[in-house]
Image (cartoon, rainbow, N blue to C red):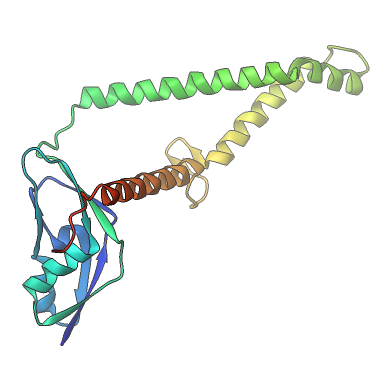
Length: 206
């Protein structure tokens, strides 16, 4: 008996209305002829009014077994996969640029306001005056030097923390934003899958 290994992806996006097994999973096995049949097995066909569906692991296995009745299917991937369908993949570049500019402005001014509010809350100017008086013996003298050094240190800390200088990475490690976005995406996918499963909307094996 031939063995087929299926690694189901947690999420996929497609511009095709007919979804096959190779669209939602990595499929491998020793018998390439059987593997090719499994990859072409139809999993789901989107209607015009549907743009998102959640398909269970058992549904994918069932469809592959129908296409390859003599093979044993072993799944090593996700329990469900989220299918997203778009018949019109074209994006409005002007709208995309506008969204990027808006997010950049909100991030820049929002972060600046937060830093200023934090400094005002802790009384950073009084702290600088105390440091200046301790070093120079005179209150207010050397304040500009301390402020410039603090500003440069703050900027350097932000760059090191976010691991980016423009488009270049400082190290090969993922940035904190990338880690947070990945966790957020996983949480959204898990929540969608659990919600649809509770509501009985998940496409399961018959």
